[in-house]
Length: 145
Image (cartoon, rainbow, N blue to C red; front, side, top):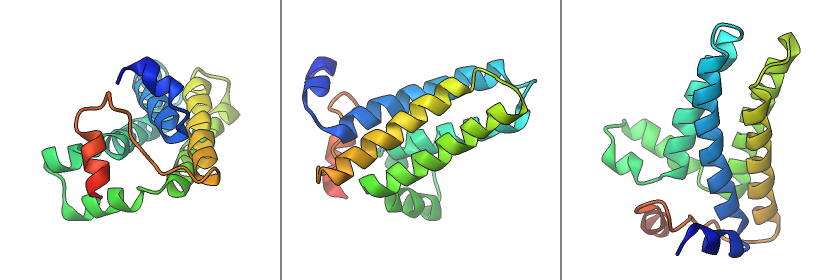
């Protein structure tokens, strides 16, 4: 399967996974850009990025040396409704960075909001959470869990 096949699939969890990975990339890049203006939110963005990467690329919990507590925590975040809530919290935190002054962290806040919407839509439509075929090993790991 290709990226275009993923877009045509109609599976909202796949859309959410792609937007989440875009969010992680934006959180890193724009967190560095805004580090001196809003350091707290930039650091929170870096923490969110690590969590996003481990949530969306599940096989990393097997490859990377992590504690069993962290692995169990990530496994608890496997449902679409739970992920929608987690991403909504991440988005709210990033939206709060705009209270101090307007900054470019509104872009990852927007993508995190869309990720939460996609996961929630998939949950309410009764779609089973699936992973994109573009992430190596992710689909096999999701089927094991």
